[in-house]
Image 1 (cartoon, protein in one colour):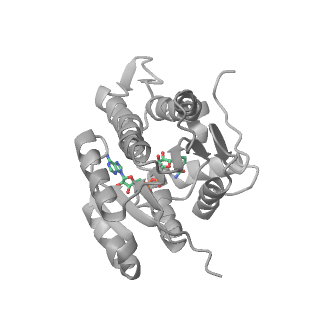
Image 2: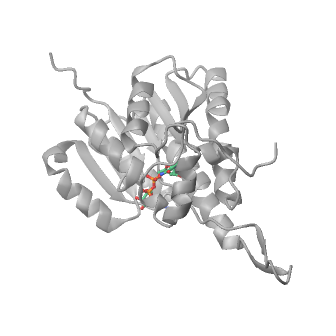
Length: 265
Ligand SMILES: NC(=O)c1ccc[n+]([C@@H]2O[C@H](COP(=O)([O-])OP(=O)(O)OC[C@H]3O[C@@H](n4cnc5c(N)ncnc54)[C@H](O)[C@@H]3O)[C@@H](O)[C@H]2O)c1
C-alpha cells in the first residue's frame, strides 16, 4: 500500500538551510509538494540540484519574507502551480545577539549597546516575516478551503536569554500566536486550520555558527539529554503534529531538558 501523501502542499520559508531544509526533505519525501522561500539564491540553487528527482514537487523562490508583496506573489505562484496550500512552516529566522547595554568592567561606563538596527532586523525577519508568511498563506487556505496547519517556530529562549533581548522578544510572541489565531479562527468557524508552535532547544544548524566551542560546551552541560537536539528530532515533531489532528493552539518544546540560568524569576 502506498501511504504517501497526495495533493498536499507545504510552504517553507528559510527552507535552504537548517531546520527548514530538513523539513523540505522530509515533506517532499512523504509526497508533499513543497514551495521553498528563501533569500539565499546560491543555497536555493544547491537545493534544486540536490532534489532534481523531486522537481515536479518542488518550487523554490528567492524571496525576502520581510516584504509582504514578494511573499504574496510567491504564494500566488505556489497556488497556480500546485492548487492548494495545506501547511506553512515559517522557519526563516535570524539572531543578532548582544547586550542591551554593555558596561566596561574597569571604567564602569557604557562601552557598547544593542543597536536599533540589530533590534529591528531581528524583529523584521522573525516577527514581521513570520506574520507575512503565515498571513499570505492563510488567506489562500481560507479562500480555497484548504485544510491544514500553520506552524510557528519559537524557541526555548522565548523564556529569555541574556544577550538576546531582540530574539527572545520575537520567540516569546510567536509562542503566544497559536492561542490567539485559533481563537480568532474558531470565532469565525474556520476550524480546518490548526496553528501549532514548536520551541526547539539548541539544534546543530548554521544559526549556531558564531557560538564559540567553550560556550557551546557550557550550553550542553545544561542539557539533561547531554547533547544538542538533532534536526531529525525537530522534524519528527513537525511530522507528528501534521498527523495528530488533536494537537492545536499550543507550543511544544523540544529541548532535551534544557536548564536556563541567569534569568530573574
Ligand atoms: N538552530 C537552533 O538552535 C534553533 C533553536 C530554536 C529555534 N530556532 C529557530 O528555527 C528557525 C530555523 O533556524 P535554523 O537553525 O534552521 O537557521 P539557519 O540559519 O540554518 O536557516 C535560516 C534560513 O532562513 C533564511 N532567511 C533568513 N532571513 C531571511 C529572509 N529575510 N527572507 C527569507 N529567508 C531568510 C536563511 O537564508 C536560511 O536559509 C529560526 O526561526 C530559528 O530562530 C533554531
